[in-house]
Length: 217
Ligand SMILES: NC(=O)c1ccc[n+]([C@@H]2O[C@H](COP(=O)([O-])OP(=O)(O)OC[C@H]3O[C@@H](n4cnc5c(N)ncnc54)[C@H](OP(=O)(O)O)[C@@H]3O)[C@@H](O)[C@H]2O)c1
Image (cartoon, rainbow, N blue to C red):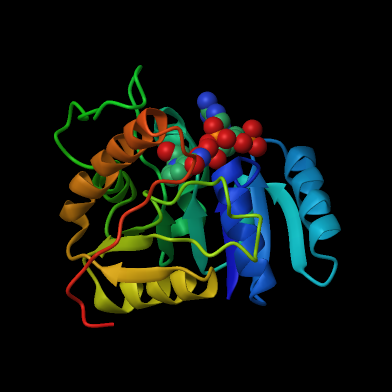
């Protein structure tokens, strides 16, 4: 796949992009500034010289691909999506955004009562399909391909085919994806991120995660 990562200059988007590039996907790193995107791509290429990786501004990145990943802080979500909206028509947007409040280790409920993913879907309209995934995956070990990520990815969305794409990207990042139902369920998944941050702090670890039991595999 050819995948654009909006905000792929940050730890989470960069780490996921690195894993997908290592799995053979073409990665376009997006940034508010084209030069910053280009520099991030150069950094990723240094780690993975065989990778098919480039960098540019968010809008140019979104224009080039069919699958766009949103990886910016929640407070930057609306503005970032506004800046790329014309390029998202007919495309799949996978959002990794997990809203945090002033205290990252405490659940932060959005004023809308929705998830950030649902807010993105409402903002973009039905011509763009939004899927939520990777909210509970810490960036810490993503750049270490040898590290076995001991956590599942909950994938929420309203269309099975779109979730299948996200589930494939979980597998390609060496993570187990679990279809976790409708986009509305992203509310619980996003809030769980604060719980995991609290567990990290309390237990002095860096990558607490979740595992779904009972799936029989
Ligand atoms: N880090 C983690 O361990 C982790 C784990 C799970 C989920 N997440 C979620 O993944 C998303 C990205 O996390 P991150 O740690 O990579 O975030 P980050 O480093 O704080 O930000 C990612 C990128 O977003 C852009 N950005 C930052 N502030 C912005 C603003 N005010 N307006 C527009 N763009 C802005 C920046 O890109 P440019 O300057 O290049 O435009 C930045 O490099 C977040 O929503 C987070 O909740 C993170």
